[in-house]
Image (cartoon, rainbow, N blue to C red; front, side, top):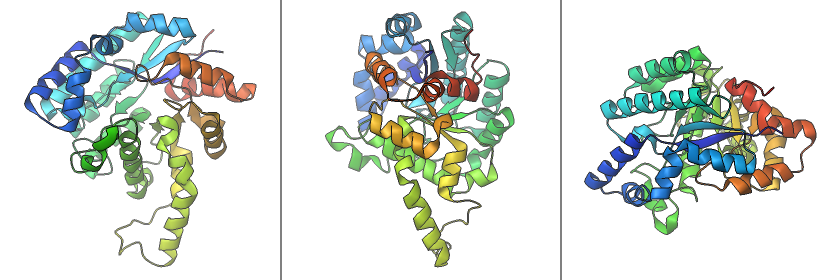
Length: 336
């Protein structure tokens, strides 16, 4: 069974170097963490050296990585540097994919700090660099894509029919205090909490009413949102019946919150390796909306592959999750 892993991090060396510079001038919980992590030679090698990862892919039978720039992404920098780093990352990734088109595919990076240039980069990625979609590492310095100033990016995504992978980020400075204790600001809890907030802002802010064909991809089995779909509909409908939307600053949506999630969102298994949540998400979303991912190098390839190969799925569902859904959504050429 072909395995396409759909949330696999990479980074150009220049991107790592710029983050190390940033950690020397800005002192926050995030820069302190990254200042330690990016000084580890093996951590950097895993992100930068694609030959190195091929050895691990081959050892565990992973056929393809869909590569994307690692969090927190180019959004951490000012608009000019972020835009330049996005372009550099995209050109580096495009060359890597061209060298090994059966092993790698790519998601382009953009810097939402400059929405107009980011929109142009979406178009360049999809029409000139051969990317399969775009990744944005959630919030941009505390701002979210429901803000209309970012909508040129969404317009470009829709025009190019480019899926948007909304990858987690550390909570912004305005929120991070409560997450910075006990190791909670990253993948343990902060990532999922912050990204699910972003998705809720998109849904409740009417983004999918404005862009009904926008395709959104979430990792980690949907950042817990599949579990909340019934609750979201219930609360929205109750408030609507009581005429409380306007006092609460809510918008009247064309559909229920769960409808947008089921019709505009795909999810991946990145970092999630338990059968019960997978089965629940398949039941809630349908087999066409779930894709395999490892979350390399932050998760263990051996563990992720063993999980998916042993998952109690029928043959057709396994085919869809393992590779067919990714082939269809990201327009990856099926294997011969």
